[in-house]
Length: 173
Image 1 (spheres, rainbow, N blue to C red):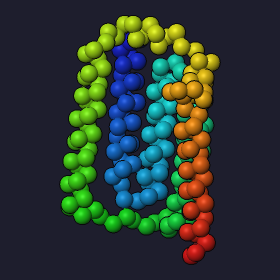
Image 2: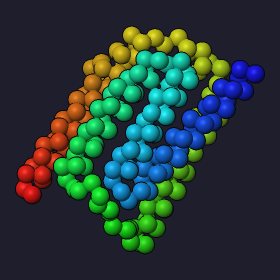
Image 3: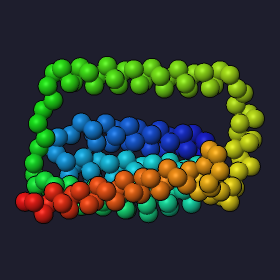
Image 4: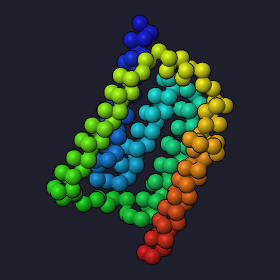
């Protein structure tokens, strides 16, 4: 009975991630979009908690739901008025966006199908269960090949540039 309950909770969390993600990109009010993004990030943290990754769930809430959304709202308030609506997309752009979304869905579907058809699931689960936080930290913030310290620092510089750009735009007004 416990596994049925966990499947139901997983379904609710996954459905909320999908719904709030769609609402994030389809709403025309910018502050509502940031709020829906916050809900999506909280639901993703809930997914981590369901998988018993308490540390990743806490990091998700602290870093993304806390810091990044505050940064987004701060930059939105600096660059536009809170009640502004974005203009509707032209039908040509909407069609191009739909084609791009379908192409992306096809590529992701093919990648998932190719991954699961070429490997057995049991060894991957056993290998994933043996990974500890020290090795995750080493792989994320290492400087060797296929490690992510340089992209992490590049994204932080990009976010700093966005903040400075928002302040410059706000000062001109």
